[in-house]
Length: 330
Image (cartoon, rainbow, N blue to C red; front, top):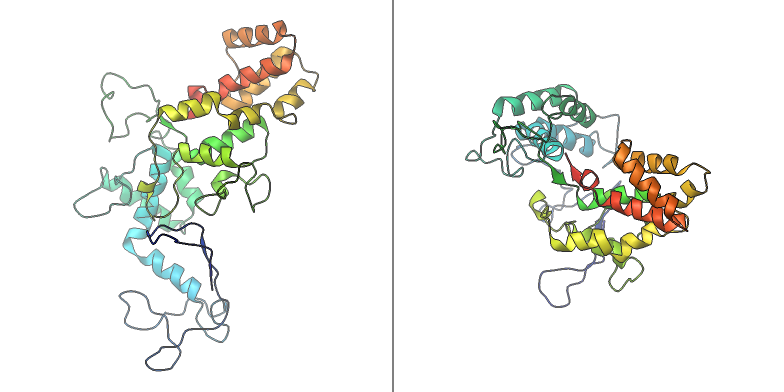
């Protein structure tokens, strides 16, 4: 079933709104030439969809074929499935795919480390395509845990994974991280409060002329959140721009989250902790580490000299949200 909320008033092949497709739990399609029910068939397969699990009836309760499970089995049998999934997860964790660009598996674009990709794909398939197992395997490796600080032998290397490649958090990751640090729930139209940007199902979470959520939309777009018009990672922008700097330093959205009267800063000030305890807790929340003695001394001095601790603590939090440790993945 199709719910079409898309409109193209200027015939420019660019649509506003979304197409939402729901899976029909029963019914079928009639072949217009024969007048008989059409049977599903996979690309390259001569016959109808093979039965996967006759105990489950999802697509057709009267059939012995669970078409969704059959589809899953057929996809995972394809030689490129495990390789492409392993390469995509590697790219997300390492900043560069073993096959790069990650969507280009042409024979003329071979992997930089074919044996590594083959072994990851084999292990992924052997563990029943468990993504958590694959992520755990990569993150436990010495390669993933390499320092971002290059040495004389690898400072020019960009393809051999000899050191970590620092890169900016994605738009959704940065947006969600800021809300988590400040303890502010994000709000998007037609979605429950507290939904993370990474969980948004569509390309644009904000309607046009929606001033209430315009700051969130501008922030996500500025940091490269794609409109999801293409099934390609290349649609996402990871470039750094001057506009992003202004968003982090002086955007109304960030200021609104910092000054929210019920955010984490308010609860920290109301907790009765010492200035040093508040600063220590904020550092652990934002950077996952304790402040250095110099950082602790400067921040506690700022809080101690302030007539109103709230603006001073907002300044400390603002500085942490702009720190390289927070904005970059290393």
